[in-house]
Image (cartoon, rainbow, N blue to C red; front, side):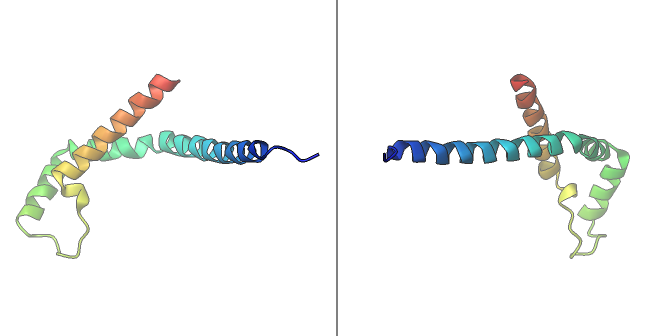
Length: 94
């Protein structure tokens, strides 16, 4: 007896969903474990050291090749806000 094609299709969807959900579980766990590092970033952003580093960058005192996205007001603020939004979203789903 030949099985209907939709059984094969549904099996593929099931396998793909399982893989996605397993990956999502893993990434959520990693995200939660990373929160102490995010807190360090937030503490730095609110610190006098960040203000000093920002002023030094604005004055051109850092080498041009230095990566310094962390000194971008919008960049760091946006990441911190996205982090808070993601935490809220996860909290709502628990």
